[in-house]
Length: 521
Image (tube, helix red, strand yellow):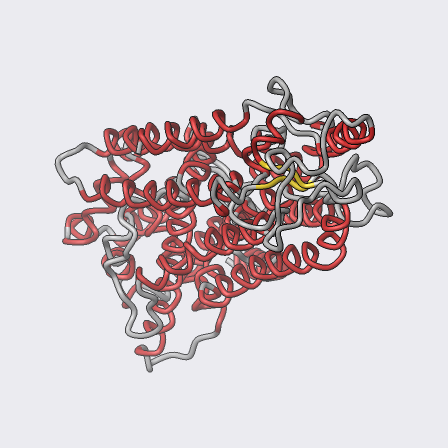
């Protein structure tokens, strides 16, 4: 991994020894031809096409790689319009990143972003696993009421129980069936007596969840707006040059859209102790009312009892209990509902789709940058994609090591993420500032070979065509695919998202009912 990152940085810097400004170089070469300093028949300077014609026409000058280095090369310089270039996509991307839902657990809220940028596949996979665990909680609640033929139930009853199961799962993790724990603490014979307290607990759990989805939606809309404005001056107005290849880099980061939207759809607890205190209050109330201390130490119930009685241990080892939704070590819930379970393979395939989509469309845009073919930015995207896949594999491998303590696992993951995220993000940002602005990178030498490598100096017509016809279609296709992926995630995780995401109407209705019961009592 270290060698691959080093190779990527070396590759990024080495070919950029000579900066290229097409318009300025085009004017310089035209003057040299006019003054007869250059001969139109010089096939070492001007590219010879497949028909044997030397491309020295002042209206369409094409240089060889060597000719470009001699005539257009300059000491390393960045683009002259770095600010406007960054405004097109960098600021909206930053807004997307800071809108990700983070853990309320002390400094780990910042580690969430580090893990997202160092391992986007595992981050999305973890979020999907969390939603899947909640989906199973919902189905378990539904099946529980289906089996109870002695009484009728409403969808609200199912949701209340599912929310309680989701709260228990938050504490004990995905490796224990929350319904078994609930049944141990709240036996069926006592459930009618405790229904009010159960409803209060579900309401408190749902009401303590954060909900910033609307704010995040505005950040996504801004990102889309800025991207589209790169093509429409009536919207953008401030672009100093057409988007050209840099829009490919912007598309490569569109995998952030499903990740950020899903993280805010899942939400989080408003404080580090919210869920813990609410579930503990329920358990203490139940045990006080029932006077059944023995239930605390029976099988599955003892797991929850141990965690609730050992608060320091619980918060010290919070990562195991899935407080950081973008890093869940044990992905697959071991408890299963009788129907509607999604396999971890299915969730993993969904998790890689945003990155594959972003990489494909970003590469397609860069491929169609004159002279069409593989170029430095293509290689950058391919290498970063490979590195992120390797990062996901390393995360999975580290999670399988059993003899490490949980804290050791956590620090290993963070170190790995820092080593990967920082170089990748720096190279991506610098690529839009001119890191690959060189004769070497714009010659297509990586695809065409040394003998056929060439640099068109007057490519404005091609760029204008691409900006009108090709790039908008690719950009629209990429953004649409990311939205469709997110829509599919919502479709397969709809039951799980119902568990903790209550509408304002549902909260108000239950709150009103609880107030009426309180007054009646």
